[in-house]
Image (cartoon, one colour):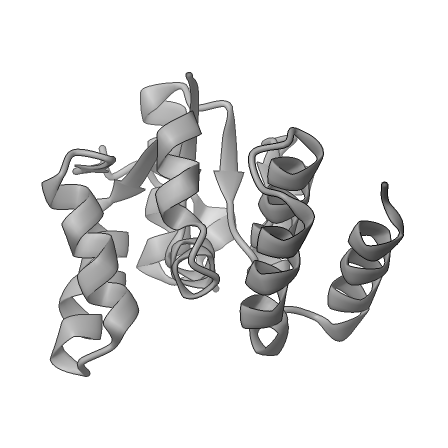
Length: 164
């Protein structure tokens, strides 16, 4: 099973699209303690439904939470603890990729030659690998619509609708 690290942005968007439960069945999903704090602890204080869903997946051992080895990435000073510790965790557990939708962070990952994908990219992969049917994919995409770039939404919707 492929090992991935999710930052808070990717984790929350996949939860809101109602596909995180599917993803944890086919990927070994990992988050840093800081991402847990941001997405679950802070989210629960604000009564965000996705925070409770994520916590349940963690309690059911579908998502693993890790402390990170406080490496210093001086070139990531402009990023939050979630992004910095997600990159640290990627190296620490020898993951295959990071899932994020933070465009600035993705540019840094590209510079560092760290493999990554976005929530929309994961949705696309689930569809093409027949883990979701057309209807499920379009439903998840609609839920993701207000959270992703409109060009990506339009392109993926057209691709799925026109596929056989």
